[in-house]
Image (cartoon, rainbow, N blue to C red; front, side, top):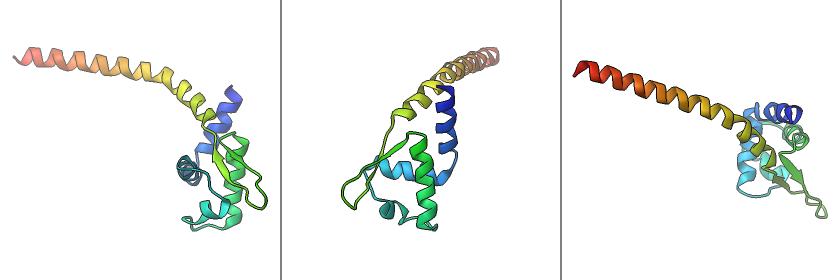
Length: 109
């Protein structure tokens, strides 16, 4: 899972790729449709899509001349599970901060 996770994080590191995923979360789209809002070439968008595809974040269909791209959120679940371990850490920190602030408030009263 670590290698796959590294590949997903690498794919997510680029803001253009994150924007492409956000668009695909709304529904499938062609490369041309995905490229519309970006001030980059169609070839550059295609390269970004290949990175996302290698990471398993998108799939491409084959329907005649039309090759729609679709989001595959499975790898994002792996990222969420990995991050969940750190959520417990931060919750503990917030609890400790809350206790400390309560102690300060009690001292002032």
